[in-house]
Image 1 (cartoon, rainbow, N blue to C red):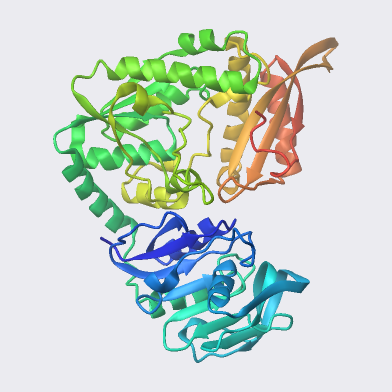
Image 2: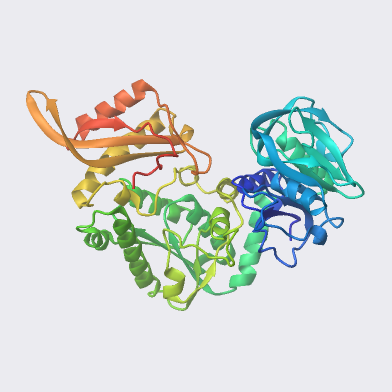
Amino acid sequence: MSEQILIIDFGSQYTQLIARRVRELNVYCEIHPFNHIPDNIPNLKGVILSGGPCSVRDAEAPAIDLSQFRGKVPVLGICYGAQLMVHQNKGNVMPSEIREYGRARLHKIDQHPELLKEMTIDTQVWMSHGDTILELPANFKNIASTEDVEHAAFKIEGEETYGIQFHPEVTHTEEGKTLLRNFVVHICGCSQDWTPDIFVESTVAWLKEKLGNDKVVLGLSGGVDSSVAAMLIHRAIGKNLHCIFVDNGLLRKNEFEEVLHSYRHMGLNVKGVDAKDAFYAALKGKIDPEDKRKAIGKTFIEIFDQEAHKIKDVKWLAQGTIYPDVIESVSVNGPSATIKSHHNVGGLPEKMHLKVVEPLNTLFKDEVRRVGKTLEIPDEILGRHPFPGPGLGIRIIGEVTPEKIRVLQEVDHYFISGLKERGLYDKVWQALAVLLPIQSVGVMGDERTYENVVALRAVGSVDGMTADWSQLPYDFLADISNKIINNVKEVNRIVYDISSKPPATIEWE
C-alpha cells in the first residue's frame, strides 16, 4: 500500500484542491469528512486539516480529537484547521476587525522551521477567513506574519505540528507548492512514488485478485473515464470483460462507428448496440429537461440490462466512478454517506444485483488521463471534451426528434471540426452547439427564409465547477458561422454564448 496523507475535511470549498496539490507531488492522499475518519489508515505519513465555513467559536462547530495524530505523525492545519488547534489549546480566536480575504504578503518568515524553507519575504499568500488568531497558546511559536495578521503561521514546540491562516493550495499563494512540498516530502518523509505506472501495476494486480475468473460487464460511453476503466480491467482479466457501447441516437455525427472502431482496435471485447429508436420513442413529446434526462436514463438501464443478460454468469458491474464522485457523495455535515447515481449507469447495480468494481474511484480527472496515457489509449479518446450522458438530448431545447438531432449533429460537426483544424480544440475545455426553439427571418439569395437559430458555446475550465467563456478569434467564428449556414439549410442564424459559470451553467439544460 502506498504511503498516504490524510486530509480531514471541515467543509472548505478548497479541500479537493489540497488533495490535487498533494497528488501533483506524486504522493497518495485521501479526503475524509471530520465525522467519518477511518479507524485504521495504512501507511499514514501525515495529516492535513482543511479550512471550513464555520467559526471555531460556534456551538455546532465541527471538531475532532487531534490527540490521535499529534506527536505520532506530522499535522498541518490550514485556516479553520489552524484555528481549531489554537482554540482547543486555550488560545484566543476572535472575529477579525477587518475582513481578511484576498491577497496578502508574508513580511516576516522564520525560516528555521522546515515548513517555510525556501519561501521568500514578501511572497504573496491568499487569505479567506472571518476569524483570526489573536493569541497563541503557551507552547505555540509564531513563525510567520503579514501586515494585518500577526499569527499567519505557527509551530507547536516539541512536535511536527503546524498551522497557517492562509491557503497554500490556491494559485494566488505564489509559493504554496513550496510549502506543501516542505510538509509532505520533507516533514512527512513521503517518497513520492504515487505515479501512473505504479497505479496501473498495483491496480491490475488488485483487479486480478478481486475478480479472478469472474465475468465483468461495463457500459462504455466513449468518454475518458469508462475507457480507462475498461483498459485497466481488460489488462487484468482479458476477454472476461464484456463491454457494451449503446448508440442512444444522441451522440455526435459518426461518433458511434468511430469510437466503436477505436475500442476494437484497442483489443476490447465490445458489443455495439443500435438502440436509437427506443430512445426516440422514450423522448417523444417530452419538453422538460429533467423529464428528458429521466427518460434517457431509464431507457439506457433497460437496454443495458437486456444486453447484459445475454452474457452468461456475469458477476460484476464495472463503473468509471472517479474520486470527485466519491467525495461529493459524502456530506460533511450528514450522519452517513450517500452514494450518488451516475449519469450513464445510475440504478444499474440495484436492478442487476451485481457486485460493483470501480478501479478509478481514487483518481481525479487529470490523473485518469495520465493513467490512460500509460495504458496507451489513443489521444482522440483521452483528449475528448466532456460530453453529457444524455448527449444531444439536452442540447436541443424542447422536444427531441430525429430531424432535430440530424440538424444539430451537422452543426456540431462543423464547429468541432473547425476547432480542431484551427488548433483551438485543445485550448478549449468544452465546446458545444445548442439548437434553440426559435426560428428567425433570413435572406438567402432572393429568397426570404424562416429557419432555426443555433447557439455555439466554448468555455475554459479546470474541473467544470467554474468556467469562463472562451474568447475565440472573430475570424474563426465568422468562418464557422458561414460554413454552418451555407451547409445546413435548416439554420440561418448563429449566436455565440458569452456567459460564464456561475451564474450560467455550461450546458443549457
